[in-house]
Image (cartoon, rainbow, N blue to C red):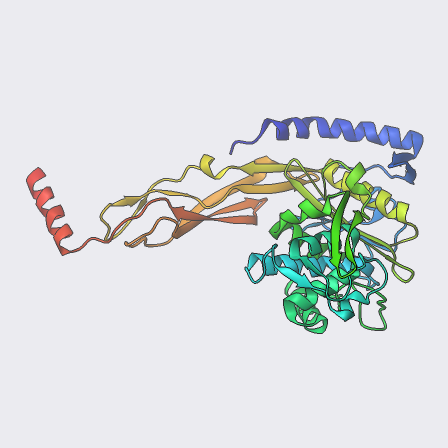
Amino acid sequence: MKYKKKAVIFRILFPLLVSASVVICNTHACAYINGQTNSFIPVTSSAVADGEKSPAQTGVSVLAKAAVLIENNSGRILFEKEKDTELVPASITKIMTLLLIFEALHDKKITLEDSVSTSEYAASMGGSQVFLEPGETQTVDTMIKCISIASANDAAVAMAEFISGSESEFVNKMNEKAKELGMLHTSFKNCNGLDDSIESGHYSSAYDVALMSREMMNKYPEISKYSTVWMDEITHSTRKGTKQFGLTNTNKLIRTYDGITGLKTGSTSKAKYCLSATAKRGGISLTAVIMAAPDPKERFAEAAALLDYGFSNCTNYSEKAEDISIKPQKVTNGMKEKIKAEAGRNFSYTLCGNESSDKIERKTMFKKEIKAPVKKGDEIGSIVYTLDGKEIDKIPILASEDIRESGFVDYFYKLLKRLLLA
């Protein structure tokens, strides 16, 4: 199989770079990250390959109580520290709220232009808010801005009521979605994380936060249009008149980190300082979650360090669908004897540590019998990709043309044609 020149250069130069980094780290024993000094241990090329990694294995020093780094394409864990410990999530709770909002948009249950009315209850929310007044209306688009940029508790409740009729019913959907995503250490009691506590039954873990963040970024990457906005404003139109209200993003990494795509901060006296930071570079998508960091600057520095670690140890390998050659396949009972086929989508895989693209293999498999009629876009087989013998992806093979089923008259003409050509 062909592989990119970049992958070849990477495998040749990476051991040299690692050796150099070992010398540097042994000499200086630290690295300067985002304006702070964090102790480092040399990182080897195999540091990511075996699954969950501790700080000692990666060389990343994390003071936060819990942290995790995952690769969003496969969901693999590249780093973990107390990843399943149940902690207070604060406003990163709103990742699930946003996920359900975008799910409702995708299912066309709501639109961005829909008008959302603020109830007395929603307007009564304290903490981080945009000061929506009872009876005030804003579009869904504006409410998403308020939640994503300003972490507005009042806007989150207003949207929960708009989608489900009540916050409690919306929270039921949040918990159902958590189970669906395999979030084993999560329980939601509200949609915004305000005044939550483990005792009340509102908690999550670093890994669970990463799971819902990955779902958001993989399925609804358009969230980045909101989560990467540094400053914006909304217009309050109430009985008191019209006035502008400024929004400022609470995620400082969107101004400093290359490739940042989001996602959400959270902080209360109980939760300390939390962050789910997502970033993408060169086809590599990562999520770093920090929970219960001692101060706000530390959460950003540690998230950046984890993302740096992931990008330095991973590379992307991909094949475009149009570059994958698939031979025409035999069709029974059809007007044509063979059907043209194509790959249903591109192939993309993130290689980490000592994984090599030259060990990726693909196998093409078709249905035992492809029987007419066949419509363009029908699935007639699959391409299975493996790495070191383990399946890493399966891409559908689709018919690229229509083939009509042969009738009695068609068979008669086919027979006649053969006789005449004999």
